[in-house]
Length: 323
Image (cartoon, rainbow, N blue to C red; front, side, top):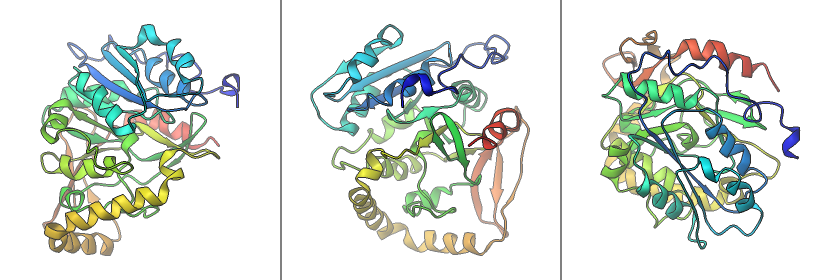
């Protein structure tokens, strides 16, 4: 499909009513985003524009091209003037490229966005507001979604991510609405958390993202946010994680086996209890109020959540009706 065929975000101008001046924040925190790329000239421009078209006033966008031999660099160089750093290196792998990019990052808030995925028009503004208004939060995840050609086609149930279950590697069951993977495209964290864990493990070629979450969970809660912040792009020619699905799942299972040696008893009890609940009991709060916390019946503390209903009602519901 040609670039001209895209008629929705990010091939249009930024959402006009997102006024950064009227946010109430004294200053916008710096957000550092790293995009690794290898031979994705058919998708990389969509990714770049989904970040840059937001017009976020304190963005540090770093692109590490891992030795592409297609037309990727020609496309990326069109946006070089808006990038904080661009490097075309010899092929060393996706995760070393991300580590290299985030080692250069100076922002308080960090994430990486692969070159076949996108952010939504409100993503960086929302992320900045959360971290600025809630200094106790170190790590967040948006509501999981699947996208096609810039449109949200599926929004998955809003759920908590209990810290003890993350540390045990329980979120490793693809297709399971309760224990599916933590969606990397929807995660943001403080740079201090990244530095505590030492970045991605380069010993893993395929599932270093999965390995990162339990290490994050040793130091921080994962706060679930009820709006969509990013999405996994589903296409006929699927991305790297699907093309190498068996290898990815093999590394996931090896990581899970290692984690469960010490975490299995408690994690198993909590998992059984979660399965037995017909619905979650949880508190929702309007923007600007305290973080809500979901609870299971009894005294088991589940995960903290943060509800941004004004964004969800204005934008996410609109996308749910498309496609």
